[in-house]
Image 1: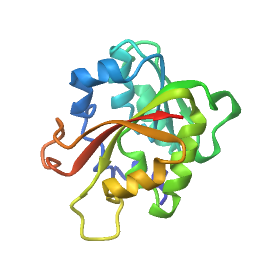
Image 2: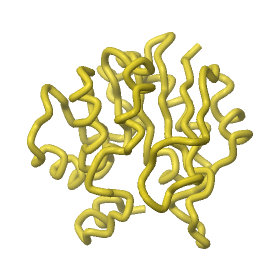
Image 3: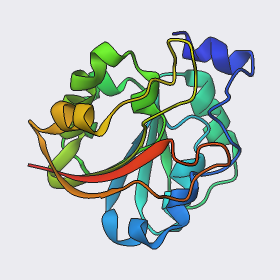
Image 4: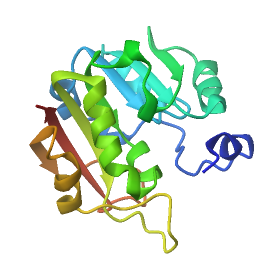
Length: 190
């Protein structure tokens, strides 16, 4: 997938113009602390929302145009943006985060890379760091994606090596049209 081309053409249906509604929920206030990574941050809506909660947030995206868009929004504080690949993290980002917020990265990658994704997130986190993820269980598309859906059982398999499940929510605040199609999980790196 040429993500830069998608941004150049304005073909970004995942960008809803604001942060995921779950970030307004009190769960986030206790789930994530310290320095947080947002992989696949796009235009940075989730990054800015987490920054407003008092977190030190870094957005990461493989599309340079997405990073340009994120940087062109008014700052919410001291958030930062990095043009880079989660699967090839720079050394200074490895093991440096207390948390990761996942919203659209996991569902966008080829499903064959999902174990790689889990390991990449683990490599970004400090031991005991947390992953708060919004995962698509049913993206509602009839083609081959993205987005690509996932079951709870599949998530267990991808993350069991490096994480333990702390909490899971099937009912969560979300964007219109996504009701019942997402699963929120809080995991802790072993």
